[in-house]
Length: 499
Ligand SMILES: Cc1cc2nc3c(=O)[nH]c(=O)nc-3n(C[C@H](O)[C@H](O)[C@H](O)COP(=O)(O)OP(=O)(O)OC[C@H]3O[C@@H](n4cnc5c(N)ncnc54)[C@H](O)[C@@H]3O)c2cc1C
Image 1 (cartoon, protein in one colour):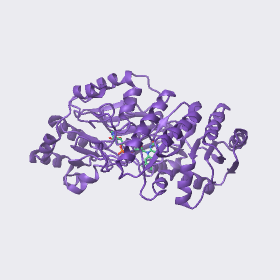
Image 2: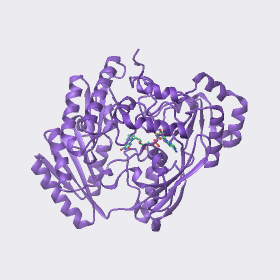
Image 3: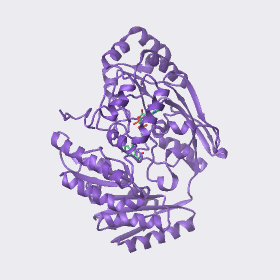
């Protein structure tokens, strides 16, 4: 019996038919209504349909959507869910790419977007306290007048919520210098499956008092508890920044430049890599803002003005030595913003590259030792061309995080199967090179089989923690190590499931 099935057998999962019956019970509906009010929940077809999807390729079936306003409401709802074994999937803005917020087993989707207050900004303590539904960019807009920021910068920052970022340990372009969400979580409050409210961590910069429970919640993908408040460390904004746009005639050479720059040593504030498929997509969608070449690197350096100048000179020297064909430097905020927004638009631009084709996230977020980037990008290209799949590779190369998107005709079952074979080989190659299946998007549904292979010795301990904190398996069931199938193509929102 596969490892996955053993774990699933030991963590109960309730039949969807009985959940539907429970959710329609008038007494339960009345109790929910008395907690969140008539406007705080809905079981309408339109609502439950809309909340059955996220930004991934999957869908589920929500039976009820609840929008709590405070921790007390979350706790009271969880007490009902615990009593009646109703699955609860917490949800931020639904921008996750791996299916983490999909209600796979039905039940309640707990939408956290109404808990969106910034409760305290305390720059002298280097922290802020926020509710989970605060949107990333809104928080940074509030911190800006103080000269501070919360740096992780996911590409979805205009939409995604702090709670979703913590639950996935999100990060982005600046992680190489400023770290990921986990590096900023000082403390948090969460509600357990049985409704208990837990305050973990503290409002201090250091804390060596016992188990680091706040850290345990980071990356838990809604499977251990519902985060209702987060204490985040904040950091001063850099005084200035500058960027270099570097064009290469081979993807591998660009990868070699990345490793050479870090070894210099120079830690840029961001270093983005784009291959020719990504460049072509952006140029077609946005009217040629980028040089036409096989690979691009965008390097940003920030800090004190003198240091920025020195580092920019180093970037140019290392790039030329590595074989860059074109080097463009800029201090102009407008130019730099346009380069950054070209890079950020890769994912959406890819979907309009070929009529009838969509970009799909299956192997979307591998992270590797930086020195392995050149060999990894070459291997990914070889794998995709062997399977006849168009692959775009881009990402935060300086922290070893590569995104790949496959372009397929999503109506064609054979293309899905080829995409899945490509994904499996890309993950296996990543693991063989000492990397991991996810750098920032999480495991969700799409990476479960590969995640279980990669972390084989840690999985049983994760399952023990899950059983201790959520004995009836009501929190986001079916995710992480609980996927019941060999293929990650089941539950697709497209009509192409393997038979
Ligand atoms: C265009 C685009 C670009 C992106 N770029 C990046 C990027 O650069 N870096 C990156 O890391 N990600 C990126 N993402 C993925 C995604 O946006 C982020 O991971 C983001 O953090 C998800 O936040 P969300 O609020 O949308 O969470 P959701 O997708 O709603 O949920 C994600 C997970 O968090 C759980 N969750 C949400 N809120 C809570 C809570 N309060 N308590 C407990 N669990 C909770 C959910 O159950 C789910 O498991 C991108 C996505 C898109 C569409």
